[in-house]
Image (cartoon, rainbow, N blue to C red; front, side):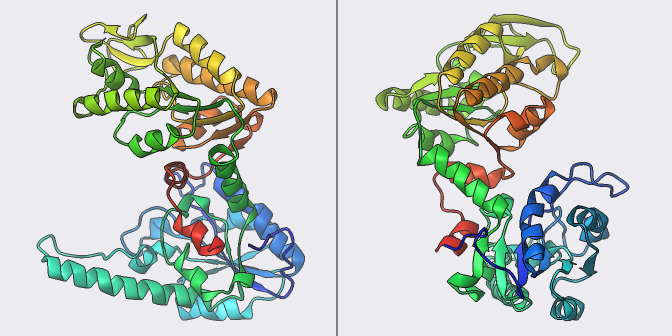
Length: 419
């Protein structure tokens, strides 16, 4: 596979898929431009080499053309960060886009309008009646798949090289993330710097493991993490279960959990996972105490109790101090660390302590030579909230993509380049 570092883009027109799906306020001002900044090294490399760039991305989940999801809103920010005026095409597949792409000179940049204004980007039919028959649904799906291939070919026709630097969408077989790569030979498609970093980080935690390997899995539902947990149970030495999942495991073992979040239909599954961990020689660690509250509020009354003795009418919203000590001790002894999901309701300031304790333990381990990967939206929000992102090995930009990679799935956006 080609390396972007060694590739010379001089004289090339490059269509690059980025993830500029950034949050906007009610006045369409960007509130967090992290994703745009993350793509700058790749864009600047292409420009510096003497190439030109055709930038494509999605924004939000539009149901057709919707002005509030126009990439025009982010154009000034992209231009400022790139350090040159970026042109704009108001239709990613229109005649204007084709003509502006054809007119691009070395060192110039063009931003295409939102890819998802077209249903073909995702390959999902839109506008079907609720009463549509199965035959009508099948026909609509077949038609949009044909349109998806045509969209990919149209986008590819603008350029001589394809670069994918959008790890956040790598788990989707969309026109611009996977299918487009079919129009380029192996010498003219490659990953950008960000995608390379993401792929390398996943490789280190799944296939280049230094032991002990500890994964911290938070989140509210066991059901959303089943495949991840099962895959990790074949790889890790320690699996720390935190967040709302704690109470499903606790209740499954006969504990009292008050009104804490629980999946009653997953109690047997929790016991099966405990059994599988034991069979695989994995140390599965659960909380021993909890910070409980009498309501789901930052201002609720709180107290610390054993995790299996939560009072009726109370709920666990974070781990307790003894659990913090146990978790931190295990993390600090680890050489490979994966953190996905907070230990509690970190959005409430009074319930951030457990997540902060985990983050600080990861920082200490990283300082001692461990490789640490932080991934999943809430974990990233945590590490950023605590101002510790620059003190861990890698913070992933991919939520769903990272989780599917951890599950052991092959990501279409990666396969399209690597083959």
